Length: 129
View (cartoon, rainbow, N blue to C red):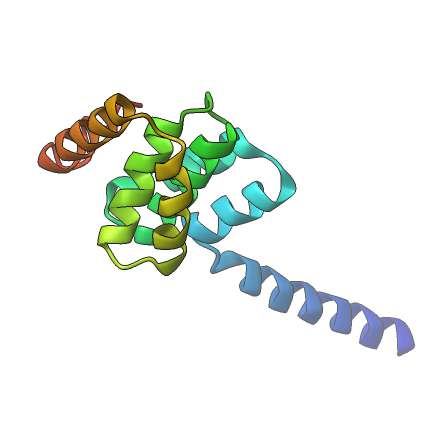
């Protein structure tokens, strides 16, 4: 009898745990990969969300480009993605944008703004990946 109850409890726990993990989506999976330091898979999961206009995903791409996590380090790309996120109201992106902006030359700033305009006007298809 004890074995049957223990087995039933384990099966129920496995079903509950499995159901909880089944609801994770691309954002949660991307953040989990990012937090583990698996930056390439994180980028692959987060980039489509950023392209769909998700401000948090855009801000994370900005951070990843700024730090060179899963991509070649690029302050210009960081500024572009952080600017897009800031326009969509992400407060963390707005704060980081000031820091990144100070690191850019005027030519780099111009390049970042042109890239941002091309990215937006192409519906995120031409974002300098």
